Image (tube, rainbow, N blue to C red; front, side, top):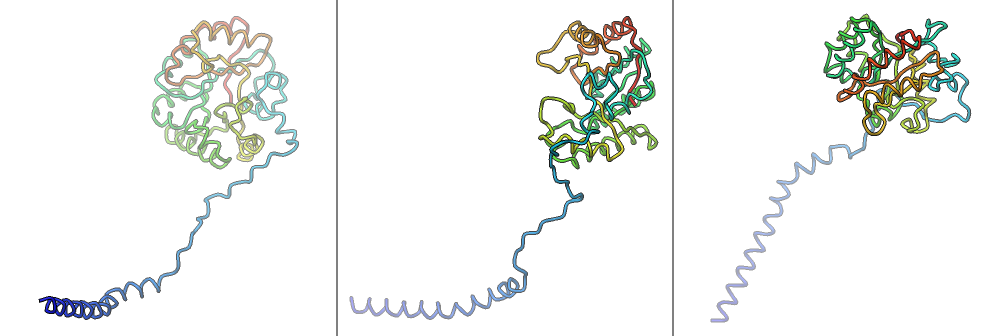
Length: 294
């Protein structure tokens, strides 16, 4: 009995070996086309696509050129007229006391309140618009323009990280915003005025210590820019009441003949819109004439 079982086991093992060796040629035939196809293909290579624009190397000069050192943010620069880029925006203001009301980050649902107040006092202002917001509120952009207010560029997103990655990304956002303006106001509309989100002379290093490169890029494209020398404080810390905002503006304008006042008509800036009548009335009592930036 044991002998018969052993004979059957040997026979089964022999059959398995025959099928195993017979199966190898079949497997080779089945796999061969794929091996040939793989051999005909080029080996994998990592490809680096060229960028649309060669990005400039960011190097901070040891001593910036004079024209780039005399930029326009400090009060004394605006007052003395040595702000080369800023003078282009302030050109034609002449001698006297002039106030330039500027509103950033709009348009938004707050903007109609601001426009209504400006109309009531017959005052013109300059609106630095975010392209994305302008696209969402085209009727407000047209309302600002038709009322005689100045329209200026304030980037497309106001998002520091993508905006200030390189000068090229900044210029791309400026171009996108210009396209939105043309779609709303017509191809004939052009603005050469830009305001850096966050400000050019601000203490926050949004430019990664390469401010001069960004300033030169703006100038090379035929544009100019301007910050402010009076800040109403509507983005500083805890919300301020309308009376606090107005008091700050009047305090900071004291003793200055040309003031560029920073305000915002972004969403939720209700107090800024409420403070505007007191700001205008206070500046008028001090003899300021209102102008727009060009």
